[in-house]
Image (cartoon, rainbow, N blue to C red; front, side):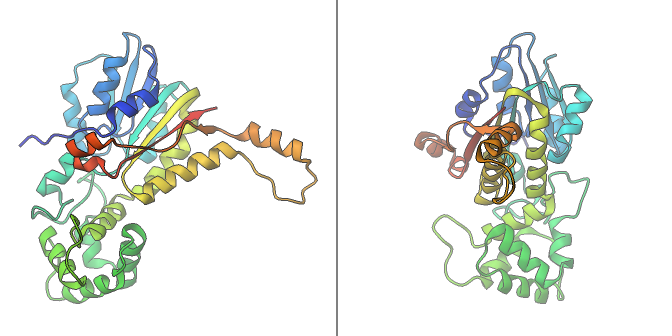
Amino acid sequence: MAFTHVPVLFNEAMQALAIKPDGIYVDATFGRGGHSRGILKRLGPDGRLYAIDRDPQAVAAASSIKDPRFAIAHARFSELKRVCDDFGITGRVDGILMDIGVSSPQIDDASRGFSFIKDGPLDMRMDPQSGKSAAEIVNTADRDELKRIFKEYGEERFAGKIAAAIERERKKEPFTTTHALASLISRVVPGPDGAGKNKATRCFQALRIAVNGELDELSSALEESAMILRGGGRLCVISFHSLEDRIVKNYINKSSRGTEYPKGLPVTAKMAEKLRLATATMEPVGGPLKASKEECERNVRSRSATLRVARRL
């Protein structure tokens, strides 16, 4: 079965990248290539696009792009600079696009275990060939660790109650399917499901983040982006929940401030400002962008998307 993915904030991302016909660009989350194809259409014969994705299925899908200006690598976010080094483009890149989080094909394919809508194995690995699955974490992590995951990554109010119930129930039978875990959470969390949101939503988000180390991967990629971009190059990041967006916002703000000196040092205000500006690496371009009402109506998954843009100084 073919699973499709509709890229969110497509027009906004294309505009934010300020694509030059002869530029070099990196799509750090190929997915099913929606944004990549948009970039290629805007490049001239001398332009180049390099993509990465940690999901082998996404990398396989990229084989449908028969374009000498395009290349892809199977890699994680945290390997962004290593990939750019391998391609010989570090310090020469005009734009990086990161579309964070899980893609529609990953959600829609029950065998990947990302969603509780269709029953499937409790996996959630973006690269099924490496790392611990969600089932391994759910069945082996102690109660405190499960509580931390649900609370920190899912902002789940009933994290402790859910963790205790998992610890109790897995002694009878290990959790192996998405429906088994979602059913338990539904029974444990009090009250009816929220408007349009299943009770298991936050916990499934939290497990996915923990399984794939998503927040650490994002932080690593952001820190490497300034080394990869040329002066004036753009960093465009699309995030889908507050934890991701906060990391992106904080990185851009910190990079735009440069080195800040504690009060009391023998440094004049004028000197401190010059040094701060000299060490700043990024500056924000506009404010956060959200999907239009029309896009949200066409693609419900775009409702939570936020695009932030920064420029390399």
